[in-house]
Length: 373
Image (cartoon, helix red, strand yellow):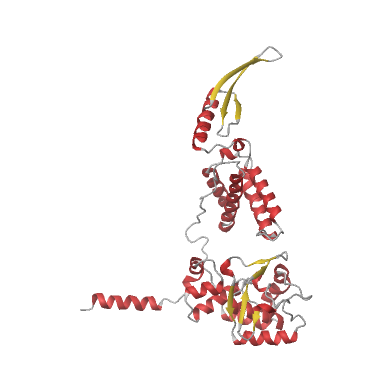
């Protein structure tokens, strides 16, 4: 039970002062006291505290800990897990910290955890959108904030996660993940402008659909020239940290065409970096290819030389998927080869590329059965 009592005292100058003291005991048996200038403020807090205690949702720290405290604690938690074989890479740590400190903390950092509501998180979403922050970035910010608050819940700082369940919805058509792959002519122009090393890299990416982080981690032991396959089980980020693939579905075996196999066989015979643990596409010193350097020094100059529309390296993955669909592979097979975590991801991004002739033929057959007499 919580009680509100009046406290009066006289200052050293002989002035009379008064305040209202809220006293209560939580379910752990710990005593708490808070002082308010007005009785109505104390009564309002009493009602709130009694409701939380009765529901088992009261957390004493929530009244003093802020969103910034939760963010700081979560970042420190990630830093402790970083670089010790756990799922916290340098890229993940930097991105998460940047999202929270740059976007969430300025707006909500001073808010007490006890006062944070879903409405406040939704207001953050609107402010970020008004500031023209991209839809994908806003979603990532809210996701990072939700994980930070969930960590605070686990520390018994607050009972509920105010960001959990908050959805970031874009305008109609905004944030669509449907992709448009580069044309065959554009790819041909790029290949024609590249040297033999670039051609190998581009052909492999455009045929296998591997992500850059996966391709630069491929070693010769992952390539089976006889079976004509590449085993995808590892990735490397821009900071040189190796890890398992993005998801379990990312671990897969992708078939290789005869042309690619022939190219790889010739390259293996030519390069001095052809041991089982050597990289198939190394840098000049035999180490892994740093993607940011590769883009700046090799890919972008090549795009300019080919005089084609600015195309990102990731577009080669889209090109690969589009050729699989053109060749008649079914959506489930495309999902497997692309290493997508779900069927929905495949269809959201590439569903519009699947031919609709079969659908039209099916409708014709149904109409004929229904309406022909």
